[in-house]
Image (spheres, rainbow, N blue to C red):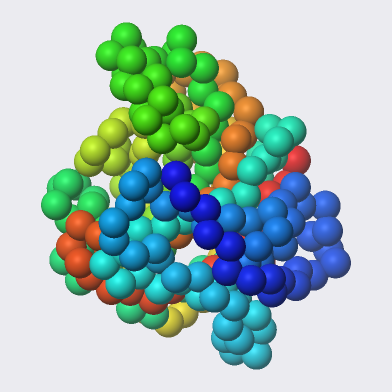
Length: 231
C-alpha cells in the first residue's frame, strides 16, 4: 500500500471528547492516506471543508480508491462515535457484486484477528496478501457504510473477501446532505459480524474512513466529522 500525505489541517473536537484514543481528523500527522498495492487509478481525495459553519472532512471519489487511516498501537477502544453525511451517492454501486463494489462513505474498524482463527485457505490467502503488499493487513475489518441501495441493518461480506464485512447504518431512503450521528459498540458489532470465526474480540489495529468508485468509475461526495474512539 502507498501512503500519501496531503498537508496538515486539523478538525477541532469539543473538549468533552478529549479522552478519545484517536487524534482529531486531519490530513497528515497520525492520519495517512492509503491506497491499494500498485494502484493505477486515482486516490480518493480528502480535504478539510467548512460545512454548516463547522470543519469537516470532505471525501470525494472519482473512479478512485483510498482510505484515511489512523493506527491504534495500544489496541484499545470500544465505542466509536461520529457524524456523517452523503451529498452525492455512487450511482450504480451495489455491495453485493464485485463489478459494483463501491461506496460513497465508510467508517471502518480494523482488528488484529489471529490467523489461527481463520479457515486454512483464508490463512494462506492472508499470508500471501501480506507478503505481496508489504503491509500488516488486518484479518478482520468491519466497515460501517452509508449505502443508497441496501436497507439499514444489512450485514454482508465484501464481494471480494470475507476478511471485510459491511454493516449498513444509513440505507435506502436516508436523506442526502443531512448530518446523522452514530455511536457503535465495536465489541458487540465485531461479534455480530465475525462471530462465525471468533468468540473473543481481538485488539483494534486501526480506524479508517474512505470512499471508492473504482469498480463503477462512479463519483460521490461525502463528509465526516467529530470522529471519536473511546476506551
